[in-house]
Image (cartoon, rainbow, N blue to C red; front, side, top):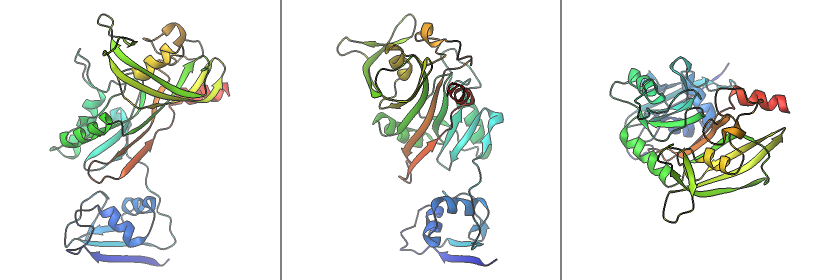
Length: 311
């Protein structure tokens, strides 16, 4: 089978100086981003004579790039590395950050009680095992009982840059939820100001002017099922317990929620020991490359099985 070869050195006036090697290879080959990722995964790219597996590597003047691959072969990217034994899956990773898929039964960070073995602890250990100079820094959180996508910075600087995006409401964050009852509208917005009750620590919407944190949640009905609404919920703001509070105050709490309207949330159809809430989509601009990244996570088994049963 014939091979295609590309061979080039990064020149002083090259627009790719300090750029990513995968972008350079994409320009050399004219191939899609997915195909180029596959080239790296299958050992088809060399930088200065050494195999390159990290497409995010930065190029310098004089670096020599060589690409060799079979002309008619489909180089599919390999599945993302899994770290299930560590309690999470890696959806994306480069030298600056990583996106992980959190299981529902794991705390993101310790509470004031000081729990250990949280997602933050496990991700930090995973990162340090690769490079002792690095660690993991929290950008945002998911409640225990909620599964799905989270991004961590590998340095404080990267985490803070990501936090600025979240504060400016720039990232794309959409959840999937099974809600009790039937939402009356097909789509709409919940907007309120959230406060925390001093005694119970529960969040609630306040009508007193000047108090609380602005919270905005956009919702849409994906399907209506027996006793349940399957909904997509997009966060404009990211307050603690925001989706849970908004849905409960609307009379349609997240199934399995033990804190907000458990009288409605706990129904025989939902037997899982978790909430039916999943962070399914996460999109943001890479703080270094400015590339727009977008990730999706499949519905957890408990939610998918109940939907299939009711359909």
